[in-house]
Length: 269
Image 1: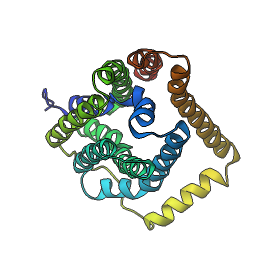
Image 2: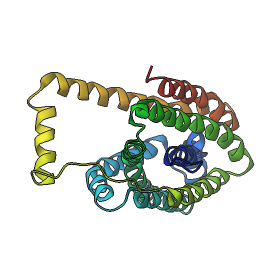
Image 3: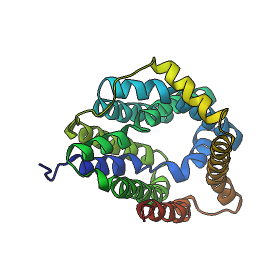
Image 4: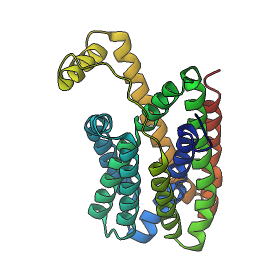
């Protein structure tokens, strides 16, 4: 029986906590003013972060399926807290890259795990037909919280440049507490007919070699995602060049996040 602590509600709360990224709108001014790093240094560290996420996606997904998904979410929160702490104490580019790598592991732990938990939870409760709606709502909540965190992060930065990171660590600690309350649903999966690594290889060949339209779609998606990320990070140096006060950075960036949240929430329609 679903109660007020049902998995969908807990996953909404978990997503909200992990999406309140207060340091997001002021990360480049922080790197520049507190650590003496350039925008080019930031992009180099961000590229390393992306490489870690890509490299860890498959092994962490395998770990999540084999062990416990709620445990994987707890690990994600823990690595997130360690990553933010590492940024606070970083001294130069190498320290920041180490911190970004730790945060990459956290992102890989969350990626796919939350959606899989939502799917199996709804399947177990006989509500699978609402999956797209529930997952879209969760995605929307996440982006709304990114927007809220951005607005607050700019003003926190004006009070203390380290304050956004302290609050981020606190919200991730709350997320870890929420992950403990999640009930691990019954797994619904077929028995493996071939070795997992061969299955991964066959799927990659199917997508990238044997079906040109699918490969082109993936490539276009990668280009759009990369361009979107690049433009998101380019906003802050642009604001700095135009002498906009850093406390307003979050308000300006939040507009896009809220628009994305609305698209996610109502995308099932």
